[in-house]
Image 1 (cartoon, rainbow, N blue to C red):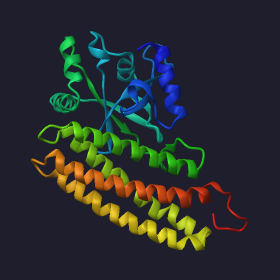
Image 2 (image 1 turned 90 degrees about the vertical axis):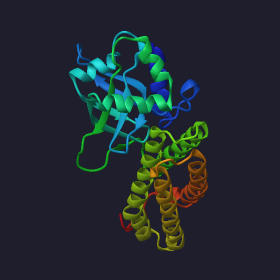
Image 3 (image 1 turned 180 degrees about the vertical axis):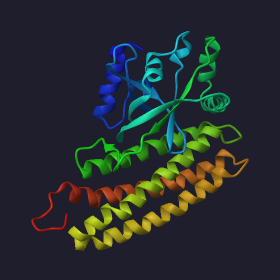
Image 4 (image 1 turned 90 degrees about the horizontal axis):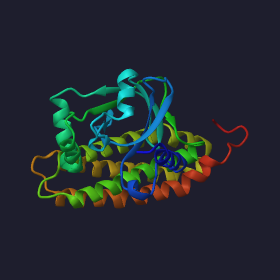
Length: 286
């Protein structure tokens, strides 16, 4: 795609916490910054991606079925260390080109989710590569795309809302059987929500309890809702992991989760964001 077109997407993505409009409004997008193989200069490219269990994400070097690999792919072959922006976090990652037969297995999963990948492969003699982007462990959490804790909470919540909306649409489009990639998408969402709620229970909630003792009833309700959502997540995991599960059963579980989670997120935002946005009173615990 032309650089000017790419740059508009990059700017919109960064300005709106990962949200973009137009043809990519309902796509999973990330920004991949690579180091130029010839110039050594950074280059940022918006790419569609697939979840892969939370430990890594997958990108496909299709270039629309062009005869040559895209520039970003040639760059990461020379410099595998890259920067990933997913709308919530910015983190360093190591790029690993999948070897066959793993590449073939993952590519088949992508084709099942979107037949367009098969059309791209049919247009070119090259084997379209699949690349895993694996976060590089470091001290502390990854950099959040937010200027404050209040903004960060909203960014995270909106990312979960977008992912649930995508999964609902994907379930609706399924045939008689649940696709392999959709199973991965559901399981990755479950793990992400579990991690988020665990972090809140260990971090934000105790901090707010110290600063605002009168908030105890709100925090108690949020903790109970965490337990209820955990039960819904476990049921969704069980259903998704069962062989032969049909989309109808998954759809009903996803709808129950969506209803409960949206009510929970809205209540949490109404009560916690104003407190997280306010400066701590003198002498209050920090």
